[in-house]
Length: 406
Length: 130
Image 1: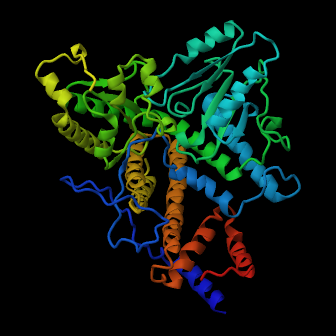
Image 2: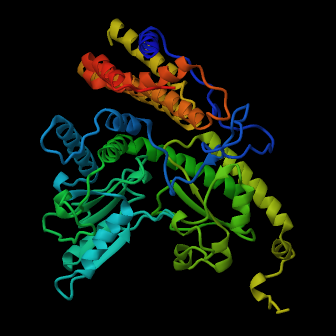
Image 3: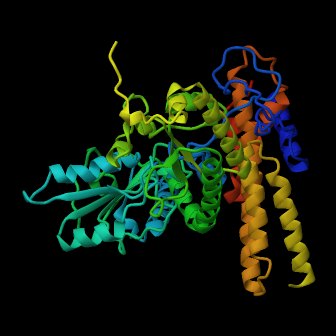
């Protein structure tokens, strides 16, 4: 049979030599001298004929929005997407048993990253679901004066680190539940739920180089924190989150947590160095640049800069070779300036000029240098075109201007 | 370090760098090369033979991770071509079959003796690749 013969040939080919490698469409980063615009981003659903040469895509500097999957995470997940496809709640056969074993191993990996017990980890579809579960506890409060403090560990817009240990101390002394959304912090800064007296914690897979669509919630057992299930059904995950646990996704989350634990120090050192490089190089070449957020209590991988007299959206459009964001992705559809920047007292005009640079595990020095170069070039160009900038150069104080209506 | 294990370490180092350079993605490729160099450099003064063996075993496992990625990534790129099949000339059948099957074979790494058995079961189910 044609099929069998083909497979026999293929089997021989596998053992003999590595197979033919297809032409890699994205072989290299398009870092060329000069401002040659890259071709449009590649789309797999294109109906037109494919391009002959390599497809160029922007540099990725938006890790707060999402992170690429670490190859080690993909390696851990693939068996469960191919041959080991059992439902982890099936109790009667090997497919179920091996899937359950993988799920429990992943649970242990997540728990060990935050110093928790595996029984305190419930898998969810992401940090948003975890947040909702945690906050529903407040609405379903048994005692009228039960309250909950909920704080982000690391802010996703300006990268500020909240004093979690201190807040935890206060909450535990006042017998108030303490929840933290650690989506941007898990695996990047050391966290320990016992040292920091955290009662509830939300974890997101795709912020730590894991898959999208999965997360976890940490729920303290001693003293017991009661939460109400958002999703009812077959009683999986101790009744706190019904629904079949997606084994490939949770295996990916577990692997991402384990890799993060091993790489935390190395990544932190590298990202700090790159962040320092980016900030210094931009600030020394451009005047009137403000870094938003406390410089001391700051996670280095999230840099939010405001470029005065330049509109943020126009700078983003100008920096089309670099994937950036001006504020958080979850509110990017609205035109309002970032609520975070408004809350820290940033002027309205500076809030509109903010850009968020994300540096992650896979960011290279060349990408940072390229981004800096383009940023400086475009800010200068946009400022040249700006009448506000012209007025400032002439020494006019913009705050003293009385704008008339037409 | 004994001469034989030194040679082993160097062979492994070279093999890992060689495999890492096959990543088609710029970011994965540069990360792998950089991380491997830094890890080997960081551990170059380790003297304890037990620790050396542990590190070598971890490195071998990581090398296998990278090797498996090469197979699965060639499937992913072949997948892109499959989307465009109507507008593209058909790929040589041997290429399509090879990359998909090599993925199935290589991903059964935990049950090495039976990987061929799984492979044959798949064929009995009558999968058609064209």
